[in-house]
Image 1 (cartoon, helix red, strand yellow):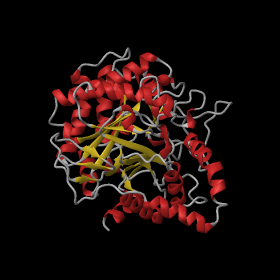
Image 2 (cartoon, helix red, strand yellow; image 1 turned 90 degrees about the horizontal axis):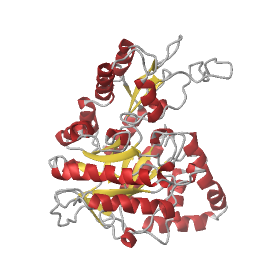
Image 3 (cartoon, rainbow, N blue to C red; image 1 turned 135 degrees about the horizontal axis):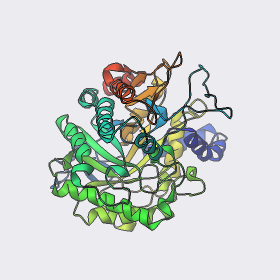
Image 4 (cartoon, rainbow, N blue to C red; image 1 turned 30 degrees about the horizontal axis):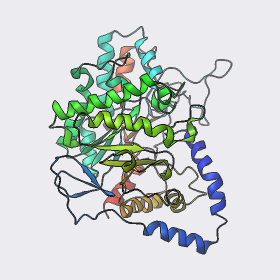
Length: 462
């Protein structure tokens, strides 16, 4: 999650603990840091395992490829491709308005836009009187091809990365009443995406970013109004069936694409408090749901790595052995919003120390992060991940910005430059021609490489 709610959440976590840490004598803090970094490292690249599955597999704190060789995943998320996030998007459904109905402008006198979760985006798009169903389908195809096309797979490979984390939405796989969509509809886009990954020698993590009922009530879960997944049986049944459908399909129907899937990422940023989702993951609530999904996947005979997320620190996990789980990857997201006040090394050590005493024999994946415009932090933190054997995927590949600037949130930036009365294309009221032009302008040839592109290249070149 990349918004103010996450900032409040991280601050809440860090507030009390870091307030105490800064008072610890520097010598003692150095000892804690040394202890943190001395914890056991994953199996090294010189070791091999037996791997008859042909899939990425986990053993101890490491991942291994189909040949049994050590594998460190390093990649990028493709946000706003299949799941709407207004702050990344060239589309809106109307500007933010004040109580008088006038547009709310930012400090550069540019229009601002409210959050646009998938449910609202879908409703706005479907209700547009200027579009028929055929035009809607064509615009969706055009947008997806523009936001992340064949040239983008090639760019990820050329950068030296080996992973794309693909956020998707439950409606991609299931009907509104939770019946399974027909295979040709449910998997057409995922198949095409995985074929491009295979062609370019890239792994893909399938990330359920928005689950039935919503797992966190944030924009990127698709529904701002609720986090009902944790309360309602029908939502939990649906998400388990969704993953069983995916697992069985790639095992039985498209086994040629299965090796390109590094992991099934069950639930993005699971926040289990219905009243205050920002509290993060309570294992007592989340793990029974995880166990249900895990068993549904394994019942198909699937042997992919399964990713369990814990927010917002390393102590949100439990030992997979307690549930009889195997082939597990742990994932957390690390956004140090107060990086100017709290050094990144201390931020990382804080998270690791929170996990002291129950350091499970499971590899770690940092599934989302950025270090903004801090070149030194990018170098140090990526080196930290490398030394610890943490796989990673930065957030995110592409962003559309309302101004003329670039953004450290993305590798590529589409500059909308909404000066002079220009607006984002309106999903609810725009004409076919207006929406078509906006979708076409998302293509990477119209974008600018950000400093993040260079930060990652510099690190990988060392």
